[in-house]
Length: 300
Ligand SMILES: O=C(O)CCC(=O)C(=O)O
Image (cartoon, rainbow, N blue to C red; front, top):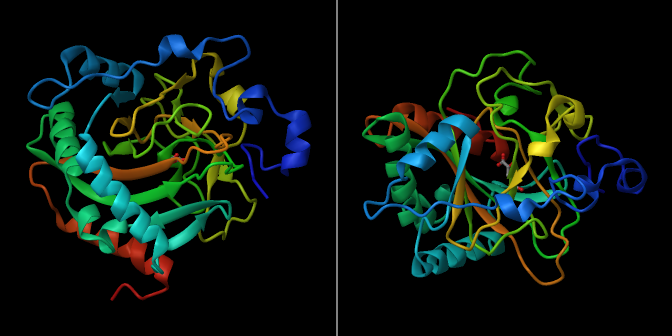
């Protein structure tokens, strides 16, 4: 069973939810989302052009047309599929509905070090004026063709306490989430969708989508996105494989179901904190605690 933004069972949602949930789409009826599907080409140095840096500051997200070339996409896809085919401790169902592998870098050398990470570290360093950026965690979220469930509207900052961060908590950290498409993505197979310009304000009210606050692999959602957000500004970000989005912890986002019959949607996701060195003790601690939490091992 899928839990949508209002965690009503699917059958009831079909009657009661707005079109953007039914169709896995963030836009409102009649709104031409294609006019807004802009992704930025990087400069020859692999950096964002100035207007994209400004857009990131204004909107809280940016889309990069191509972060890595096709051969690196192929390498990442192979690693991705190997991990999905293996029996790894951090493989779980996010909110009981969508397959998620936490910390794939613990399981495969390609996920530990690759050109996507290197390129994104450079860009996050550019955005925050630091020498580089430290990875705090990474994950895979897989929506194969026909996957029926949305990832409801939320801010990543909502995850920063259990079961959810309290509404009104200021967002003080500068973590950037990188969402790399390993398949071509659009609204039909579950591309990222954002509400721009909301990232400067405190955490909105969230809840655990399943209704169970002790849910181990909890999926969180905004309690009433139609009221909390201006959904007329929703910006879907279709991408070619190898392109990515980058967003801040306060930026509301959503992905639809994969309503296609034959197009997978493999997303490789990692978080980077601007830092003056590539690795920090914090990184190791945070990444280990995710693994320990999921595999049931003690942190010691
Ligand atoms: O890939 C998805 O479906 C959702 C990703 C997301 O919302 C997140 O990682 O916060």
